Image (cartoon, rainbow, N blue to C red):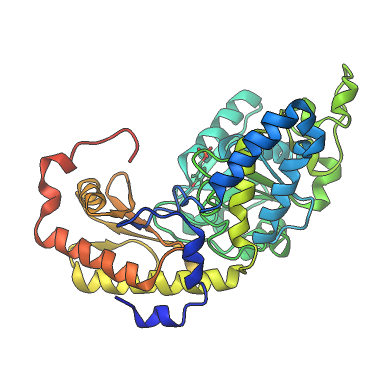
Length: 404
Ligand SMILES: *Cc1c(COP(=O)(O)O)cnc(C)c1O
């Protein structure tokens, strides 16, 4: 069935760039992006022709050594970051540690890290672990998302916020909050896990200080893909990394016994980059080459609006927890339902893949590059059927798995 809104969709042909399983409506690209169709052949080439043939010469012959910066620059284009201010590698959790520790040394007279209770737990866990390690009286202050601005004051060292709430999809105003933070001399760190590749981001324009984000969500880099981090160019000279590995050294192959920091973003590198997974992410980014994020976002708004409308008219037992206003949300839509886990399992059994976030959130991600409006309507129809027939009540759907 063709939906009227799909007829005018300029991104419709992008679906062919992805290898989507037959019979699946995939609404979880915010958790693990779909495999771009050309990635397997590119990986085979990297493995056989580069690793297999070049062996150790590949570090120079294929310039593996600078792949983190090249992939970083490609991601930078999607998040409004100047070339040379983003590097790919490590995990988001580790990058949180890296940027937060660097930021804290820039405000050593202040002891408060401000975040909100909509932040993803790993960011908060890393911050409290770092505070403990520093043993210098740092406090992690966690407030409601709408109280962040009011809590910005001259006692705050760093504001560390996730732009798009992983549960509700609520989106902070990066530019306004960063400006307010700066008025008080506060360093602003943004986590773009649910923003990069989903909504237009303008890190340089917003004057953000630091940012981190995931490679495996909307960027489709594959399970556990390398993450990325951003440092505004104006901070490069004074950057003080805590993880002073040899890849962040001015001359790694001088093998000096003393540490001398590299210039620029290179200083934030730590160890040997994972070339296979970075190559998969690099290849995956090709699908973004000929699209601009405003176009992607326009379709995201259209898909999310349609899903909200369809679900609310068909499924009154579900409670919308995502903002209706597209200007304050990301690219996923969440509904509260007491048996949200069982509901999601029943949906997955019928080919509609979303996910569940405790305690009661059924979450649906909308990825404009491979979803159509017809998919959205079909997913809502299936959801309606499951609720009407109470299919979710079957025992098999209530058994919790390790990953939800
Ligand atoms: C998904 C996500 C992460 C994941 O961190 P990993 O180190 O990749 O496990 C971190 N922060 C936020 C805000 C996320 O949404």
